[in-house]
Image (cartoon, rainbow, N blue to C red):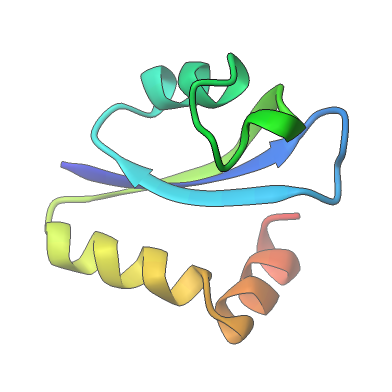
Length: 80
C-alpha cells in the first residue's frame, strides 16, 4: 500500500512538501530530523493529510498531480 502525504513546516507555515511512501510515520521522522535534503532547512514538519492507495500507479499519479499548479491549488483549497 502506497501513501501520498502533505507536510507543512512548523516554523515556516508557508513551506509545504508533498511526497509518497510506504511508511508515513518513518518518513515524517526523516523529514523532521533533517535526513531529507529537500526538506531539511524547513524542519520540523507536521503531517497535514495523507491518502492511502492500494494501487501504486494511482498513488504516483496523485502525487504527480498534487505537484502541478492545479494540484497545489486543490491542496490549498482542501487541506491548508
